[in-house]
Image (cartoon, rainbow, N blue to C red; front, side):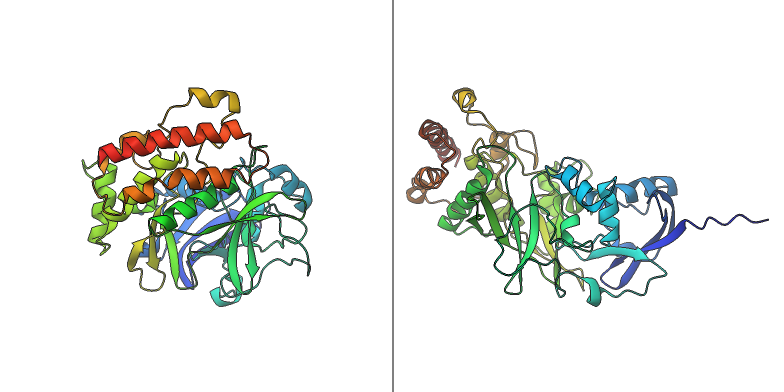
Length: 389
């Protein structure tokens, strides 16, 4: 007698409507069992390598799907599990087909007749917010099970909304000072000042006066974002350092101003002390149909800066350096990699501190002494940067 595992279901990962690979998963526990066929090597998502063994591919596939969903570090994870009656956040990601508003990958059971056009979140509505209701960054009863809000990363409370047909991301804060939304607005104002391409963030408040940031989606049904991890693994780096390798790979794919754009990002991260420029927080935009690389993605996600997580009493012991995750361990050391400073105007540089003081002063949770200390440290950073030019 042949035993048939009725809980074993075949799934397919697609890039838009193009099948990329199949895999098998337990339909009840969502435990991965084995990899099926790879149907499009050129469209394999980052992290799944064709040269690896089948067992390694299963591990990679599991990690890839986990990365598409809510992380265990998510601030409101317990309330989400209770609201939707699940033991694992991964369950919600799978039920939502892994669809996000970042790239054009998704997956479903092969027995289902689903098309990209009927499920993607660029063309189709999602969630329901009652008329007159105020948006909140967290996941509430208005979120449907097929929502892109189960397919976002990061620890902070955040969610996608639709406003006048456009997709916007709103984000809250993890700390009692709620400084991150103000930092996002400050970053946008500084980048505007120097005409550096970026995602614009606005400062908003809920009906009960909780601050959050809001930004418009930087991609659409035709253009997708591919992070720096994907870029760095696109070609073999050999013995190159990651900074040189990243820029060379971009140039090889017809992004000729990659160095100028990355140098702007590195300098900016030093000036504001951005501690979260990991390799998921910068990358490229590409055409989702032709796979042509288009440009370096605009600078985004700048909230974890300006000592956002430091207690007031600890600020005096903070120096001008900060954690640098893009190409090394230090934002100050990363300054040694760059030499493109044509964007920087010293006369405008003097306005950076004014922007920081004015915007942080709008946060009623911050003491004036804290703001003054942050301003003083920023002045020192500006001096160091100007000497490095």
